[in-house]
Image (cartoon, rainbow, N blue to C red; front, top):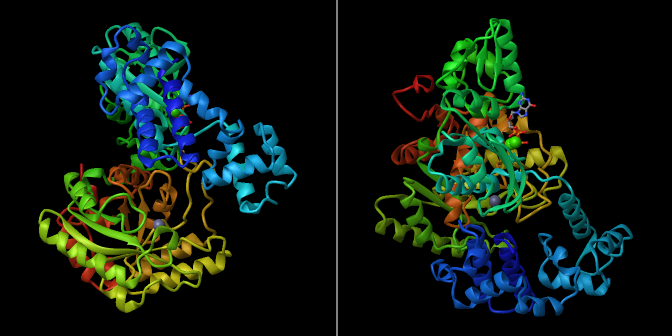
Length: 597
Ligand code: DGT
Ligand code: CA
Ligand code: CA
Ligand code: ZN
């Protein structure tokens, strides 16, 4: 049994206990154990000879330790076998479908007498599933999509891939102190929203020792290939990781080559050929066969007559033209961000109190935060009535006094109703600092109606920003089927945002990234301005800002277009300005974007 299988056993226990309506604390303890085991940097099989290792794992108590020992020593767990025997075998795959609760999953499986996944597919095809009470066409469709998604080769969100890559890099650095310049390349370095596999490059004096150590990492579940300078493995939870190890002199060229995109490097190669050079993983070779090596990617670009192109722009569009004409934008970076304008607390569907969210934001160096809990129509998220909103506000005001180090803004994420009206009256909205208006319902409206609906909300003088404009969701662990975007005339919306002085959110949650990269570029060309916000529903969510910044960078976005790069007092002045006049605000007073390094 490897660590992955052991973690999976604990995940299964948690699910069975959920079905049995067991204690939430017990369920969480098993879920946590599974997470902890996934993150271990040693093989649990070592416990057989060194039982004291178990006691050293924080968060793993006696009961779970005993179960790990049983799994390691016997390859099975009596407790889990007993739980399993209480339920039909086809149940677990149905449980995996988002939006299908344990009770419904159980009903589906028993009423249709399902044993295998095949049975389930047949039940979907015959319409038997849709005919069940509490399922219907929509859920049947969702279950079908889920199984199709399982069958397809998976691309994961960057929010899943980046932490996995960081885990591998930590483990490799610990196992191999000789490793230097270990860096992500490929789509991950370009901050693409979904990632096929993880590419790593590094420098070492003894590359073969590094690829050997890499293949032996405890998180590795399968070795696809291993040579003296490269190796390819699968790590938990199911990511392929490609590693290349090179001599220092070739690192920059290799990094450029493996950062891609393939289209971008193909264009570079064409440019090199015009100069009689050929681009390869080691540098540029001239016609006499001599190899020119480069200290940095910038030096290689310069040799070919280009300014340095940031990885996020290397998509083979017009970036090389811009790199010859000196018109590449100075991109926004994470350190430019000063505030977070979309966060939720446990007043609605967040996990934490306002106090905790504010304290955690302050710890992360955020200078201002808007708490934007849901409005009254979001009943499933416990949306705030006008009375509760008043109490919410009072609490924010009392926290303000206790927390002089961070400015706390009273906000709301207000529903844009089906006709474009808003969930609170103008009078209520006028009392708020930040109003994020979002579509959460009637997402299937026709294009013209949806466009008009959102424009109507933008015309409201109190709406600061439109949240997650297209409402799309990328397929991810919590929702494997994802969600299609709304149909709307995006150009018209971008223009309306510019005309009305309404900001557009770049929602940084990695399962949303909405606006997405191409939208950001188009919207900025049409005069729109942005905020990048986390939409955090937990303290961990506050760390998602980097994905929004990556998306903005892929959208060629300069800091002056992003209003939460303003200092806290400037931002409050900005909010006091009537909407149509907000266009005059430019963050980063005293320096222009293209003066930035
Ligand atoms: P992904 O993994 O599908 O999300 O996307 P990438 O861009 O990470 O693609 P991947 O992992 O196949 O390869 C990493 C980089 O290596 C890619 O961006 C460019 C380079 N590369 C891979 N295969 C080729 C190739 O056949 N020709 C060229 N010129 N470059 C390649
Ligand atoms: Ca890749
Ligand atoms: Ca790859
Ligand atoms: Zn929302």
